[in-house]
Length: 435
Image 1: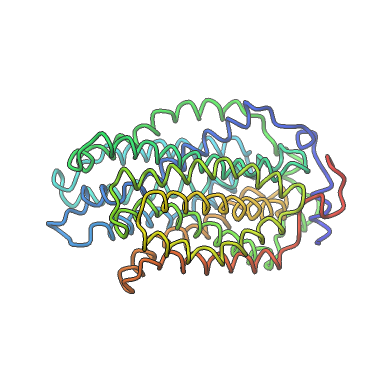
Image 2: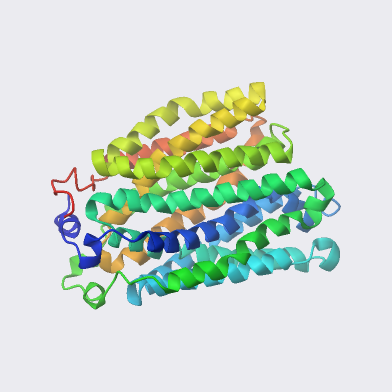
């Protein structure tokens, strides 16, 4: 392992040697959950949003255009990662997290109040795309500062557990979006859901933005003047090899995450399930992943990042295609829900070790900006295209197994990257617990 990485792992500022109080973990998690709730909700209501902004009277490809608009939000993520992530290195993690959440709150409010195509014509999809771009910019700058904060506020032998809170809160967002979707699709008629029901789901998230902002403003800062002014060039340099492997790891995790989240649309479009049952599958994903995420993080602290992720890769490579075959052949609620439960648990063991590994290998002086940019680029290129690609491949091939093959390829690439990446868990690099 690079000497600078060992030095980074071995050294700890005073805040890194203390457990983060629960209220401060919640402060980071609430903001992260809110941002991902709003972003993911768009994916879950892709069909209804397509009906609202891309009516069949104007186009026969409403769902495909809606998914393309979902992908537009990813295009600007790298810019958000660079601007807000670098701001987190230069000014502080806390102000960067406050900025990203403020932008997300403003954009989601605007999106939820935008009139339909029937009311204002072509201006409706233009406004929709505009607000999606603001959302993407904000979310592009969220992951870097907040993950850097968690790593820097955690004891070295608990960094995996702390960083797993990133995905845990994202999965809380999936769960929240799934529950709101299930309730709305159960209580409302399809016409009401198309007209205004999907807007309610967005407004639920917007209503709690002020709480997240209040909590974040009261966080301590984890980067100080000495960290911003490193004494050697190596403390600011990220090797090309690390960048490439980090991009591969993030690509794998992101494609799998958004591929699995596509189940809400997939269940309706390919399996012909009702909206309520489709959202029920999302609830299952959220519940199982929320429980599995901290287990994955804690296990990666005890036995290492690589064994946890590579174990998940091996199982998923063998399981994904048969799992989707079972769903498409049987098309029953128990089979779909059971399959999603298993795949959601494995999701945690794939994604959490990948994120903590990438975060740990980055120098503290540029950690926020580097991580934000790497994550945002991977999200922009692969996350934004995943659901569009899955739908396009399904239509092109006529095979409902397209999602499984697509995700299997991504998982295998992530496994290769993790094999080539140096182990960063203190228990594996010879550092005693708490150092």
